[in-house]
Amino acid sequence: MAFITRLPILVLLFSANILCQEEYDDLFLPTPHHQRRIRTPVDSELYTYFPRVCARECRCTPSFPFAMYCDNRKLKYVPNIPAHVRYLYLQSNEIEAVPENALINATLLQEINFSYNKIKSSMIDKGVFGKLKHLTRLNLGHNKLGEVPVPLPKTLERLSLGFNQITKLPADTFRSLINVTILDLSNNQLPDGAVKGHHLGKMTSLLQINLRSNKLKSMPGDLPSSLLQISLENNSISTIPANYFRKTPNLISLRMSHNKLKQVPYGVFNLSKLMELNLGHNQLTKTFYISRHLEHLYLNNNHFTTFNVTLMCPTIDVNNPNHLTYIRLEKNKLKGLFSTHMYACFPRLRTLVFGEQDAAPVVETQGAPGLFGISMSPPDGEPESLINY
Image (cartoon, rainbow, N blue to C red; front, top):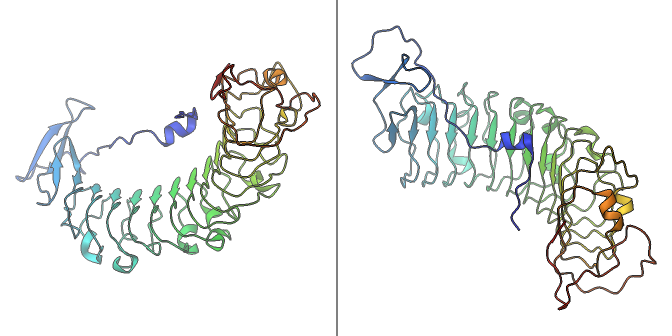
């Protein structure tokens, strides 16, 4: 079931990118014969001057004069990049190398997209990106990198290295990336040792880190307090230390589906700002405390046979009710639902996905409040897949 998570801050993080244009360095200099001018949408009386030159393999448009589009051209090399280009799009080509002279003229580059190519670490000349002192976004996802290219400029704000074969992170490089807000390391081959130590903790501006689909067996060793979202899906993590999230008190979203969690410390998710918690596709059997601010909870495809709501919600405060609105429980071993305490604890609950349950022995609940123990199957015997309150 598709569902859009209402995370106000993360909406800003993942909103569509608007390509900002810059003014030419000096509007009062005479216009060279090889340049033209267009009206900017900001001020009808303000003109922006830009060169006509564009690499013959690429496309340049008057509406975005500082961008050069070279994507989907079956290129096997980096074309000549004019000095005025700030935004370079080379994704979805067949580029294998980034030589030292490839970006030598484009010293004003702010964004480079090299994703979906065939670039190997050994074919990136050392320092080719480190010389770009204005670079804020670098996308090297979906390539054949075995290592992170070094050095990288300290100006970077977004770094995408997902879908490669990276096995280690250069500590000195990552310690210096103090301006990065979004870091994508998903779908690599990072083991526990690659994310231990204090190099990630030095990234004091980091808001989102994606480590899904790696080879992690434990939680990353050191993360900065600035984090708002952690993605750890599809690893082999089996435990979470009781005080693990004390260093990340601002966490809004935690995604840990498809791991090997059997049990979590009762109060480990007592985070005042946590709004989304995804623990689907694990091996959990016992409930735990959830924060009053949590809105979306995913516990599908686990091993629950009973569900103790009173443990999740030990006290009821009508003036400060729990914010939970959505919960998924399908593919557990539950026999039914007992919802009396459910309404009291979660008065804002609107959607409960119960779905099909795996076969499990009948569990005696002895009428204990807050335990799921009464069948809610419809008359025809088919399990009810979605309950909207």
